[in-house]
Length: 225
Image 1 (tube, rainbow, N blue to C red):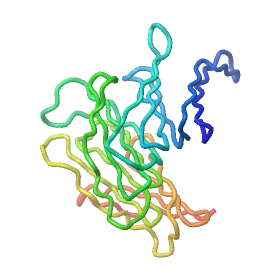
Image 2 (image 1 turned 120 degrees about the horizontal axis):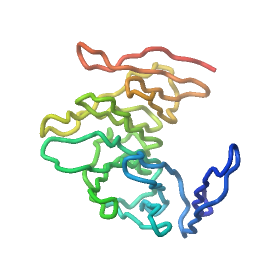
Image 3 (image 1 turned 90 degrees about the horizontal axis):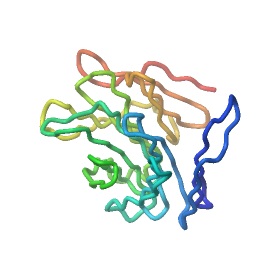
Image 4 (image 1 turned 45 degrees about the horizontal axis):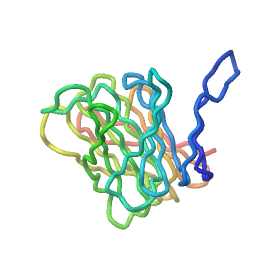
C-alpha cells in the first residue's frame, strides 16, 4: 500500500514465507490500511486521497473490491476498526464500525450491518483549529459498557467516549500531554483497551489510563527515547 495507489494483500503459505494473494490498482494514493476484526471476515479497509475508503473482502468466489464514499472532501489520513462486541442502545444485530481521520480538523464514524452498504454515521467534534487529523485509534473492548476513540492532530490528542447503555452521544476530553510535548504524531492502544500511548515530540511517548473513580484520563508515564 502506498502513494502509487496499489494495495497488496499477502498470505503466509509457510513459516516466514508470504505470497501475494490479491492486488488492487487504484487511481488514488493510499494513506492507511487495516484488517477488520475476525468476526467480520477477511476484510481490509484502506483510506484514499480522494476521501473514499477502499474495502477489499475475501469471499467464497475470490476477492471483492468496493468503494465507500463518506461525506468528506479531503484526503483520509487514518482509520481504525471498532471492536465487534460493541452494541449501542437501540441497535439490533451485529454492526461493523470504522472511524476515519480526515486531512482537516475532523473525524467521522461509519457503520454497516452487512459489510456492503455503509452509512456515514457521526462526526466527532475535533477541537476547531487543531489542524489535520494525523491518527485515530478505536479502543479494543473487553466487556466494558463504554467505548473510546482517540483522535490525534498535530497539536494534541482528544479522547471520545460513548456509553453503550444510553442514547447519549460522544463526549470529548483532551488528553493531558506534557507542556513540552511538541508535535503529536500517532496513537496506539494496548490489547485490553485500558492504556493508550501517544507519540509526540522528537522521540517521546506518553501513556494514559482512565481513573476508575472519576473516569478522567491521567498520565501513567512518559518515555523519552
